[in-house]
Length: 474
Image (cartoon, rainbow, N blue to C red; front, side, top):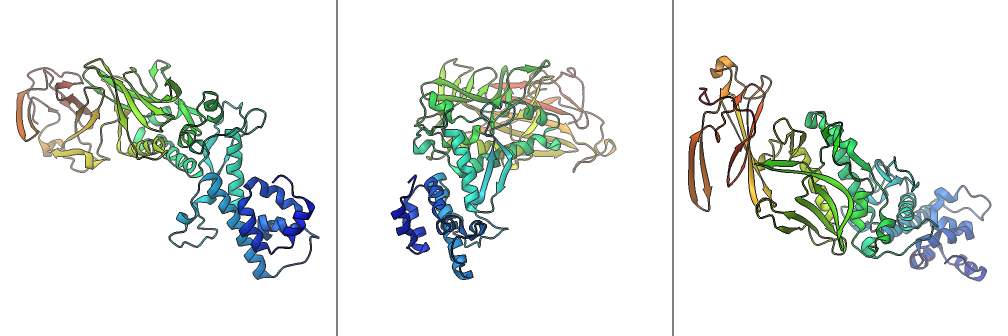
């Protein structure tokens, strides 16, 4: 309804406000409400309530406090309806606990964000986690979502192009994306967790962009892209390669087993084949995480380091169209449980994907006479689809629990001179004994880590050999 005729306006003007708000406007598009409000003060107050309409003078008689409150509630209900039907908020879910809405407790649909409207800005992101805010009214929230929608789904001439429901803007998806990216930003800025690695990861992230138009140009306007757009609107991949002679760290970290190095980066969207879009890349191109635009599914594409044959493994995060968002949320949550270290001796720092002491459910931990041992494992699909394990050993520092002084423990340094493995698999027990660890005899000093990494095909030690035959207490 772009324009109301005078007879129709007069007819609506004769109806009670409650009838117009509850029985007529819900059947008109939200953008047409903006034209409707210009017909008279009565219509303006139906759409916006008296908080906005009171600024207009000379439009008829005053109303009582009770009637004004009712009409303000009708206006709020209209724009809540607009948020539900236009941007897929769920008003009933947000109020199912009976919370009263006030300035300190507003429903999720009042959360919105400011966007960068300049399509040619290559420095500032399209959306930023710092630009999320709580709107004072449902209309203001809707207005900002509308601006984001226009930026995503209008061409350079300002004309809106059609997308399928599965590709439309979903407000809650964008709020979830903002929350997960805020977690990642906090992780990168927490020196106690990442040291100097976090700021380096942050510096490699590309500013978020609006992928709505470019994806339509690729012919994907009918794909399951709502969650995809939300994730890439804040950050749009990482710089890859080297910088000043240093390998740039990947947001998804990695692990090292024998001669196999896995180290994954967040990728700018890159069409692999058909409807498959690459979202993470491994440094050696042995493993890719791929998003299927048509189905909304995620898969890991890999070339096995043992068979050298290509393969794929589905990664399912429910049956909804937000799988890529669920997958990324899971990674953001796990970051707090990973540790930071070098993937290879003397190599570059990385997020280590092996569970650490921050994740006690998925790692084992023991301390004997001030010597700590931590063991954990991870599933490596590209290494024959097996679990690989990590064992980290170190002598504790004075400020840590269970520390013992050299006098208390009886030694200054500690050297591994023999091993005894007791391996249980399928009810069968295998015992392995031997000197050192495949010819290596790691020497421990206070606070230093030594790492063993392996899979079920053998064992490798990745640190300096301290010399065969040197005695030491373990």
